[in-house]
Image 1 (cartoon, rainbow, N blue to C red):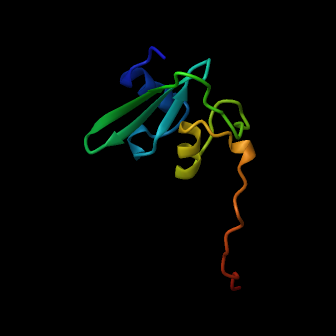
Image 2: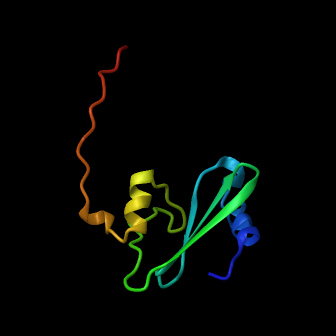
Length: 100
């Protein structure tokens, strides 16, 4: 977790993502007790840092390639709150019938 904004920016680019997209890029420490979130916002980068005093962030669901994973805002909130996403079930959402 020694990386600052510039090195995290490089990591995001190396994975093939656009650091200026406004997306949140989350990095977890090896022990998963620390998280950094990098985001581009209004002409500059923002770096959030959270350290858990007890417990670990649950890195679920697992990334298929072992390195990157997309989360929606709800999943990110649960991750940062320390909730294991494997124990969470979502209700099915209604979608209109597709017209041909």
